[in-house]
Image 1 (cartoon, rainbow, N blue to C red):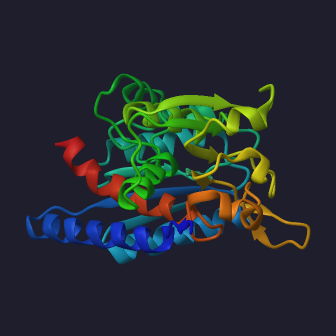
Image 2 (cartoon, rainbow, N blue to C red):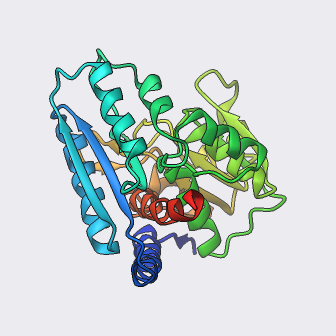
Length: 281
Ligand code: GUN
């Protein structure tokens, strides 16, 4: 029987740990504050930002929300970021992506101080991850490592295939699995014989944004399957990149969608906010 990896429970455990950590910092006279910048009125972004605020509230982290109009210029946003960089009362800075088209997201990411980069998207954070220096880890891949560790799944020496090469999930996931001593393959839309490559995986991590793409054909018997997809099926129902019911019996452990990887992202953001205090000392 496959183990269903319970992201909801593990995310709750992490929020509880952060809450304790923040309470201890508070007793020592240190507050933890996250600044969240939202430009425009994208409804999905509003939901994500609200979830981040709720998690902050739970953990005892102060959140400062900065709402800016859709017409905000790049210069205007960079000015706000600079102010937050210099504000000693702000420990973490997050600009919700995507930003409106007149703003260059890369310039925004580069403008955030690496000491406050709780998303782990700054080139310095990415570089630190790749050469093993201290820095913020991107939340979704770091959350996946927590899911594996806390479910008792061994990573060292395993064949790990990651499908998807985004800067937010695929690439940093590869670096993190390498750090955990897995043998790593990053596959993508141009990979030849994808099913054959995936069938090599002891641990398969999918992040392609295509509903139910990975069927039993792609799975080695007994593999661990981690599904980062947040897709909609033909009926508009939330599903992952993996055809869950088709692959379930072929896996030894699998993340459901929803309730797998999804809840981990915000929990790891909270962990990064608490860790920011250490990094800033
Ligand atoms: N938009 C979608 N995911 C993310 C995320 O993890 N961080 C930020 N800042 N924006 C996002």
